[in-house]
Image (cartoon, rainbow, N blue to C red; front, side):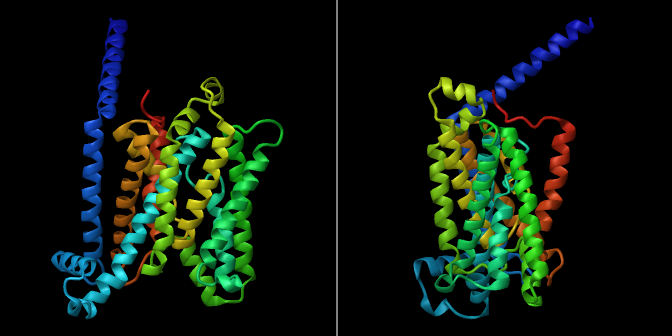
Length: 369
């Protein structure tokens, strides 16, 4: 009798899994999820602008945004309410959406790269390298003629150097493996964190140190319209490239042997993904500082919705990451109002229990078949 129950339970489990997988593969269901998340993102943007230390009627938010986009009434583009909505909150909200989408995309790519569903965008030390470059600029000044974009440039250079170091170290003693990438990334991240601490300790600029410490915990307070263009363009570019490479990302989950059989240059693919993730991470870190766990949580939720095909996971993760970050920022702005809490604290409070839940439950696979 116990054997019979076990077989029936196993059959039921397999049947349920097959049904879920068939639903995930349905194109209509996928389109419905994309449309629903897009609508949820638009609503979240409007609500995020309306909520804060000064609450604003959502009708006013829509009115001012539509008026500015379509230039209906130039006289309405003035006043304190206009300044709060258009010049303060909306750029911050849009930056939050860009940052959340970027971190989620990097998380998806990193987890495929190292074949570890518990990996985070910071697992390879790319974010830590970006923090070193950005911290040097904040505390010791910019690169001469590159004053307006020196922070982003320094963060990208730091991320790229860190990325090259990880790739070089992991290639010593044979071919690159996911385990060696993780171990090399952990070591490089520790070194970069030590360098960041040393730079902060060496600085005599007290105001700069406070700025760096707040920035390292993640903050969207510095958002301005002129600072949105580059992060947005980098996000779109990286998303398009990764979507084009979705087949390579899928094959990476199968291992190097399967890649060779299928005729895919996995080494070349790894190099491109490392550069793309370093570029996107460096851009995000320069714009909002270090914000953790988004790249860990969002890909898991996305795979639960659409399966493990990266052609579907990437756009869904981008939308979910944007929505999650917007609401995390709302909590950061309102929880201790009128003061502001670093958004990294909120994401860590959500991410750490999520990570422990996955570890205890043991169901942290990539999903799908």
